[in-house]
Image (cartoon, rainbow over all chains, first blue to last red; front, side, top):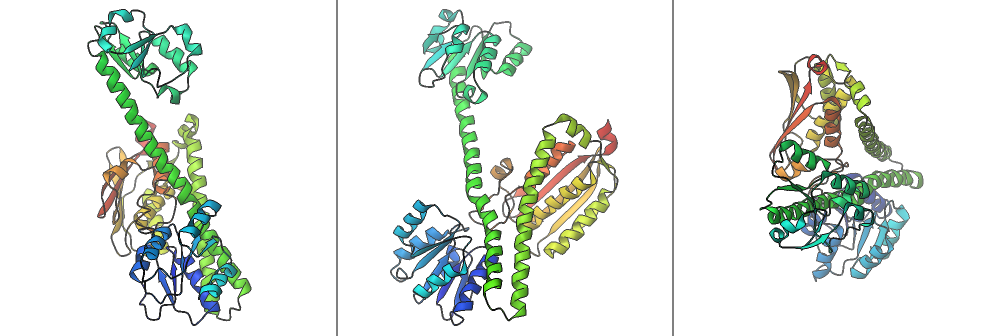
Length: 125
Length: 353
């Protein structure tokens, strides 16, 4: 949905207000980072490039979920190095543990604090 | 296959069923345990035995195993009807030549019902476990996140502050609408469960449905910033003003929600015989014939392929309102093309009788 120029950080979220919120949380702390906003996993796959430094993704999205997107990205050698952080309402420990084992680099439970987003931003981007 | 028989003269037709037979008496019902592996059908020759089974077991247990009643050769429609009403799954008439087939088709029929019920339950379970937490959590996350940004960040740009405030209001309204719909649906179910409440509800009359439709159209045009074509004739109809306004609002909201900005949405209403006919049309998503059969509370279709807000309560509320006022609905839809909902509400004079 965005024209991609310098791609540094990707936000995948189907709810427009939440997408805007995440985007502002990042922009406030890293105004120089370009943000690629995507509505779902399929939209994100179409905008993928290897120079993305960090991806925040929702899970419960139409067409392609966050987990499905992550598994496809981790199978692709061009993008498998990119850290992906799940931002989900799912707080079940066993689900989070499985997610982290299978490829997510971090997990943020909704509702989230901006500090949680910034922590991953500082760690990976 | 084994059958449990409460029939007195089983010896006469045992050879017809090609099954093992466990013989029992009505006195055995008290100690009876339902066990599908021990017997797959129950044969009775007396409707009173079915009543005794009904008394001992709950309805869900009784749907697990078919109860077949064997009737004498003089059985007429009334006798058959009475046996089915008492809970028989099927019947066979002397000399019971079709008994084996009746048993097998009854087992098959109950299996089919069970599969349909399980599919419906699984859809509901998915909706309750996925859609409801998502729908409540998303606006809460937006409100908390935006409010905390406003509290913690140094926001000098008034435009951003206004944008965040607007989004907080939008999220609160989204949450409020979810709760309102849920409360309203529950209120309607409560009304529908009492015959005196239904009678009382049906004593209300709307004398200006055309004006109410006009008002709802104007409100929704403003809310969705879209044009709605409308044409409404007047009549006195069997409904309350508040509920008629809600009925029209839910129908139009649904039409707007499942169609693209710029595509056609229209409402037309006129007297048709003893009814007031309301037709709402929209281009867009539409329903498949399978989905039309599954419309109900918490039924929101194609969540996997479309981002949709809400819990899918709109049409369930419309159906409840129609039940309350004795109206009817006809939905014609073609997937990804259009949906046309025809609603028929009784004219006040005809409703009174």
